[in-house]
Image 1 (cartoon, rainbow, N blue to C red):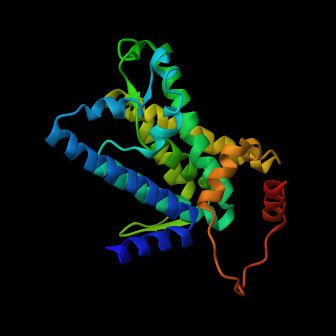
Image 2 (image 1 turned 30 degrees about the vertical axis):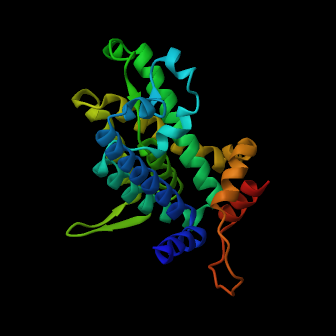
Length: 260
């Protein structure tokens, strides 16, 4: 058992920020699933605890639990919800880190989730279709954060070819457009709050890269909180000689801007 835990710790320390986010999401899901079993066996109200961590659409509830803006993006309603998000996080995060840095990925994840939450709250309080639902509605899941990363990298490198079995290569921009359209068309069919939050994350991902391309790096003023998160996620590795492709002028300037 100790060797398993040590291996997990080692993998977490040496993994990329994408892997660390996946480990955290999976770890939280397993922990809360176990607590759910205990709540059933010993008959305590575990849902009341979860409600304190979900993002409520009701402003009067939100003001009492502002931490839910962060906590909701690390929780999931079920295994398939978790699996779908982690698959896309792995895909989008791996590609993201080929062109941008870990701090920018974490910024996209956190701020994308925050932006998605804001749009969810606005929609449920001001769109007539959701007026009767706002008092009890809540958002949960990393979908807005993940979609922010996927749309961000699709905006940065829209023509990147992605290979699918039996289909062939599809440009990343078309995958991004399909995902956004799917969320828009799915709003009337159920889980409207989730789809709206996804769109908020997607919008942030697009704006994040557009601002970066104009020299405005949105992650440079994220306060000490983000810096502490970076320190937690920071990968320790041995010095080694590597060979990398030469950077284009645009990539060099973008990276230089990110470090300012």
